[in-house]
Length: 406
Ligand SMILES: Nc1nc2c(c(=O)[nH]1)N[C@H]1C(S)=C(S)[C@@H](COP(=O)(O)OP(=O)(O)OC[C@H]3O[C@@H](n4cnc5c(N)ncnc54)[C@H](O)[C@@H]3O)O[C@H]1N2
Ligand code: MOO
Image 1 (cartoon, helix red, strand yellow):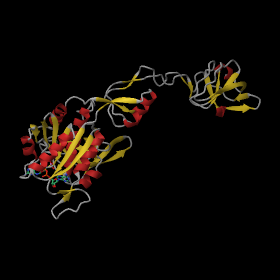
Image 2 (cartoon, helix red, strand yellow):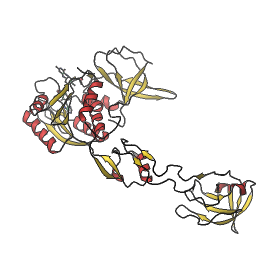
Image 3 (spheres, rainbow, N blue to C red):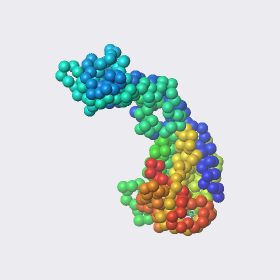
Image 4 (cartoon, rainbow, N blue to C red):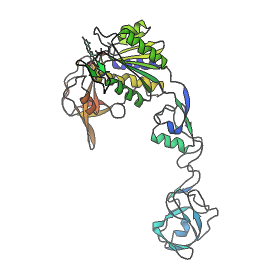
């Protein structure tokens, strides 16, 4: 059995080069991955701007406040004061408005009082530059502000818009065909027979695919026959899948037809089985150059494998430079852990933040890979390396947070 790290490296390598670039309107770019470095088309702010509502003045004029100045005009956001401010003069100004020529500071309106006859009394002075945002404070035309490979979130989209890009070059989203297998499965809402259960993994894996930046295509449930599986493979090809994922039938049971059917269809097996728990029977190969992943049927195994292997493959296809890495952090054990065996373990656990200290992570008492309730309540997985020694409460462990990824 190969290690988790080697399995991930091989799957990411098999995923191949990032997909083609397409130009997509800004409003549809959330969650997409930028294909090229983004260059600012303009300087922001494009002029020295006021950061406050108040009065644009000369710092020298207000140094000896209180003082009365003559009001010569108004500068509003979108409509500047066209003239030049002279000695002893003030311009009424609003947040975001251009600072007039001749002014070098802003007195906030709380420190001034408008008088009837076109004058303002400045009660408190302001040093030069106070509440003035210099031209180009945020960025300059030509600056590279969002690098290729960035996943486009609210912050980077705001920046791209401010840089005046109406559309962005992003990677095509990988189409991920998902096929559940098993005679025992029915869809949610259907009435299961006496020996049947409701399929959960399809929905879980599709959600994870979408969160990773892929486009899931659900092909439903294939019954446990070669014909049924072949039919779904044909549907995956028709959907032009970049990745084909099967759920279940990965292990050694007599009804585990997936591997045999795929081999007959021309799959080149990359590997089968890895030294991890949950998820030992993971299968990987390529079918006519398309990445294939056979996830184990146990729901927790399926999801943990999807997080560890399918998500990186999708991230590689959208050009994420960090596709191969798993974001981990540190936490302190809230309960002891036994010695680990030869399989890298991903232990479902809850997290509690602690002020000024690492969070406390407490493993769930049962780690059965069929238990979705425990997985849904978990905040993190504790990563237990192969042959890790027993640990006491209070010792530091590596964790993977689950929020935002699954
Ligand atoms: N003799 C052995 N038995 C098993 C081994 C082994 O090494 N030797 N490995 C175990 C491990 S580890 C896992 S994980 C499972 C994986 O088995 P399969 O991938 O072949 O999965 P199935 O047998 O098809 O199903 C397992 C389990 O999961 C349920 N299932 C399947 N698909 C879904 C779905 N879409 N939604 C919800 N639940 C699903 C299925 O009903 C079974 O209960 O094998 C162990 N056995
Ligand atoms: O490794 Mo299986 O994935 O134990 O449930």
